[in-house]
Structures are given as structure tokens and as C-alpha cells.
Image (cartoon, rainbow, N blue to C red; front, top):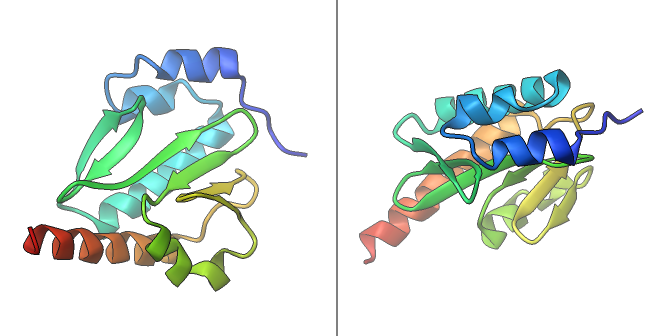
Length: 134
């Protein structure tokens, strides 16, 4: 059975989060644990990325927006911000719901750390190339 994250408690409290720790502290334990693991993987793959709250959600910036994550009522999301990157990993993401540039997952079926690492590394490469061509 999927754990439901209350919009009233998590979403309203996280709207005023000052940093990622504050954001995560508003979530139910299972969602917090899942997103802490995602956060750890992102930070390991992108040690130079700046961790901020942007659009009221955890965001990683490196030569522009890199990736984001968020907890919603019935799922969590990893926002890749690049359709071309999602297309590169399409076959590995078949078990997940994709909407635009966002991968939705449940706390029971989180994204594999190795896949997240490769996606973040691909986004770094994409952002560095874009920065170089400016």
C-alpha cells in the first residue's frame, strides 16, 4: 500500500522552507528517507552543484538548473529539466511514470542510485556544453 503524503502538512510547511534540510523535515519519515537517499546520490554525482530551494523545492544548480526533487501527495518526483536526457535513459525508466521532464516514483519503488548518478552526470555534461557555447 502506498503511503500518502498529506498536502496540508507537507506542502504548506515546505512552501516556506529556508533550505533542503528544512524542506525534508516537513515530510513523513518514509518520503524523507527516500528523498534523503536521492539527495545524497545527487550531491555525490555533482559535488560542485549549489543546493538551494527554488520554486519552493530542493534544486541543484551548476551552470544553471541541474535537477530538482519534490514530495507530492501520492508520490515523489525527480525533475531532470531535460527531455533529451530523459530520452537517453528511456529504457531504464520504463517502470516509472514520466511527465514532461519529471520522473515520478513511490517510496516503495525509488529510483536506483546508479541511474540517478548517470542522469545527473549527463545533465552536468549538458549544462557545461551549453555554458561553453554561450
